[in-house]
Length: 117
Image (cartoon, rainbow, N blue to C red; front, side, top):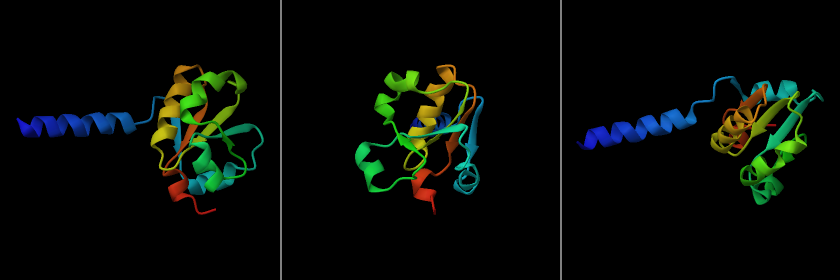
């Protein structure tokens, strides 16, 4: 019985970490190549304190808990690149953006923890 619970928990977290259909995942190395692209929107969904401590200049801070109320400030026709500390919150943000009609969304795998810029 215990192994069923363990399998269910692992399956749940695996499912939660999978990107939504249509969400691209990029590495921090790939991110370096696209940071100069002014046609993209870069969103950091960490808390203001995390953002203040260390951030990538091109990224605008919109904390995950405020993202839904700020969607009208983003252009649905432009690609949105999202980042957080580890990739978990940005994955949630990417899913939220896709469900809200954004068609071109990328999540940075590993987040700021993997960033070596």
